Length: 626
Image (cartoon, rainbow, N blue to C red; front, side, top):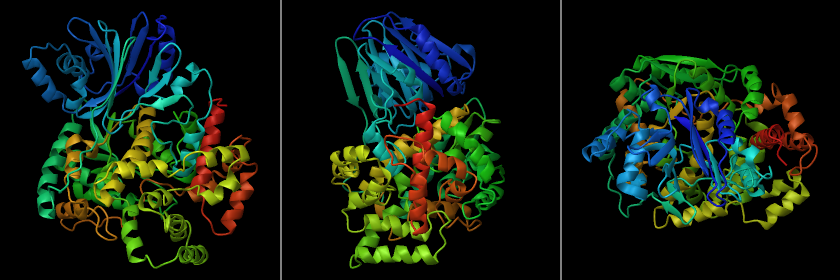
């Protein structure tokens, strides 16, 4: 686990500045505090900052070369099938000088060329330079677990593991309005767009070869949907899932340093905890506890499971003051703004965990692969209640705003509010609208006239969801919704949020559910085993309950690791909220505090949008963006 960066002036042929590269790498040194290494040769300079996980000796420092030093690589991530690949490569005559997974890459390129990525199972972003052909090969893993940001200029290409590290090298520091509009709706920019104009995220599952005379871009992986599911019974699924999850976890436990787990009260991390305890004797795990926010706190459920497993559950106490105190540093150090209200809690949890560990596992990805989100029940609800007019949903929202509590995680008034946005729309548009926290009829109250004009002339916000939905035909409707979330929320929202918060504390986060073999299991599983009516993630829940044998009761509310942000914005973050909502900006109307207070008094809940605007304004100011 590391950070990488580089300059390749293949267009101009000008010398690449090793001094500039060193400066860039120093700005992301927290990603790799153990070593900084650079390769420089005429028009190219590439480098790495290293967090030592495997072969922590100096011989494992990067850059890494092949036998004749004609190939050089800098790399960020973990190749989980490295032992298997190493054995194959040694049998083919390759000689290794380290025990790292990094060295696999140069030898695999020697054997497979640009087809090398097909063989990799892991999370990675790497830059490999062929000194003879003078080509630079950039590659990113299938699911986007490791970041790689690109900026093209008149000289060639600049790349980095962190977007913010590229800012000093841009000709203009300006905001990408398209990405900003997505961010305000969803809490994140949809990749490959980024919040910064001219900077893109490298596409997932893609390999790019660039040089003076040729450029090759190869999409080496995308999901293959079966016309008929290979697994259609729960018993058959449980038998295969037990084997697949065990193998995936074995690969993800490969480390020369101790490994722990982020344990929530959810199904995904709970199942990992059972496997980790049974197979690997892991005894210590971490969870966050929202002290004073009982309707958001999952500690009791997590601790009960820990007792069953014989694990010590380290409780990271996160009261309102702790979270509020962390917000400034969380935003000031952020590679990009995050509208996810769970981000500051993830930041604090990672900071505490990193005091004792360098590797932590998490359960992200299972919801998208095995149907875990409540939004997947919407097609069933729409079919059952197709007779209900949109006006009735709005009336239900108004009634709930008066009579139901409004401070829990996704309280009833907010659910009806989002449901009203989606009601009557086509399936992919409804899927977008139920996630959209800046509906069209709110835009004129929030966005400046000039920005609003830009938004109205651009493609509709939901267009990319529709594109994903249509591109996945003829897969089943629910399967297509899973993969919309996989391509959007998971890859552009969840993974970057967790990866950035962990790496800020020099902590490697691994996601076993995104193992190649687990993804293949999802693709051949009948969706009816996953979602049935109002029931979600059915197959995983049944597997967990079977292993627990009735010894544990799951948290009935799916809420993620989300603090009571609505309350925080009123209290501990009240002054911060007022300042950044009223901050002068070309994108928003003035005095938004009064606007949102007026909506609050009328029973509406836009606290997630408030959070997103405040974070964006704070981040834009901290980074001197135009």
